[in-house]
Image 1: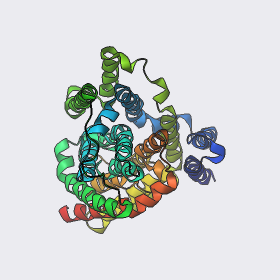
Image 2 (image 1 turned 180 degrees about the horizontal axis):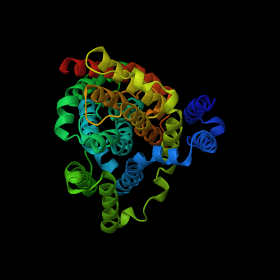
Image 3 (image 1 turned 120 degrees about the horizontal axis):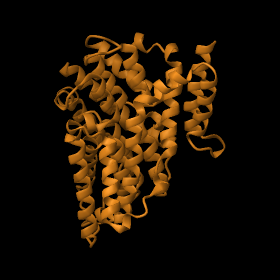
Image 4 (image 1 turned 90 degrees about the vertical axis):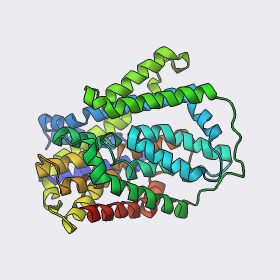
Length: 394
């Protein structure tokens, strides 16, 4: 009975985050469900154990979003939008987003690029919705190539001591496949309008563009070799926030209103609910070992579980079930599933929730239903292509 209650609470939490009954914030129902869980089947110790591995990823999130708001104050987004033009711009925007996700981290890329791409489309006087989906899709499809690409990758790095070379050799090919197929399907499914001949002429804002580019370069320098120096991603993001506050008065005061407290609470409560329901979920039985069909099954289980309970809790559940001490084909497949697979439910990843908030702030009319439809048409086949390449390289 206790186990059944834990599963019911998990389902209720995820459903409430998606439906937002009576206009409640996304975290309201999951918080209520987690409170019931802690009062009943889940002990305080178990809840703390579920949330503990997410502390550093969530800390990064809380710094990354205000950093994007500071870049906006500098005028970086408007300056960049004024310079993107030409009929080959769509493929350039797709490649830029893929590279930013791979090198900078998917959540930061969504926060940085979603407003930018919407403003670019508006500067072209075309429908911004297809371009708004580019960061959302690539936040999943391009987030497996490097340890810094996804917070889930950082969890695996910490637990299993995997290096960047292993990520590139095992998941680089599947990531390229997912991004390539994704671009072709994005063009076909959403039919993004092209700018008029010549596009929008470049204007001023040179200092804003240069300053913003310097900030992003500093982040890349901090993220990529930072771990070898003992610097976690959240430390780098926090330090850059402070540097901006000290160096440019336009970034003051620090944008407290942009801190995604609600998103942090949402992910933490989903972790508590997922941890409570873990004994009832046949994750260990479903995950494969060896190659071929077993690897494909592991990727599929990762994708389905990520869509159901969010990719970070899904990965933690699976790693605990496997009791893994080293990487294996099943771990790589699982990681590909939780990274590239949550393209159907917007709560499947932090980036999806951040993207939805970003589009609403920019006045673009999208929602969980739009995310699911585009995910099914573009994201799911692209994920399947990635799994096929993973199998071919195994």
